[in-house]
Image: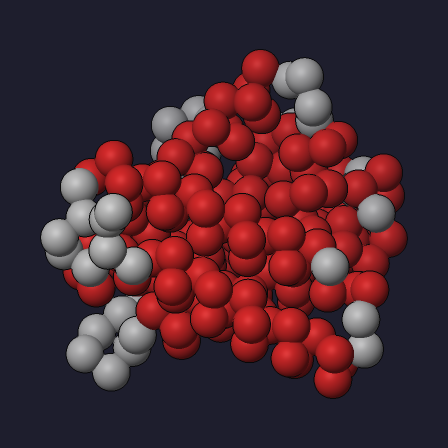
Length: 199
């Protein structure tokens, strides 16, 4: 895998990649614990132990950092559904995705896309990320249910995403025990949607 490109077109070395990930991690934590309004580049630089100018070498603007956070979370989501194989079934993939979204990535998407609503840059990013995610999920459904036509697989990818995303949003409204039962039901329904044959 190639190292990320900076705004100036240069590639990062290993040390630079590590520093970039530290910045993204700190910024993600700030968003989830303090809210997106607390994401101030100068404060992120201080927490990363660097000068603001050094941070801006990696992320010239706050929007650049927000986009990097979205892409980082997206990579984690894709990794979760890409780790399929003979012993990794849809139930496990959907369960892991839901756990991931409940533990934070769902919150990240919601906060960033709500705060940047109306921004052409983030509207395009949202369309790109969700489109790619639906493609990955559609490929997973094809692997497990190959008889479905492509358009139906994509529709089911969207339906299962909506179901899991909605369940993740409701995780805060139930006790752990209640949510565990709810999660089982949601995952079972998502598997049913993905695996049922066309009428």
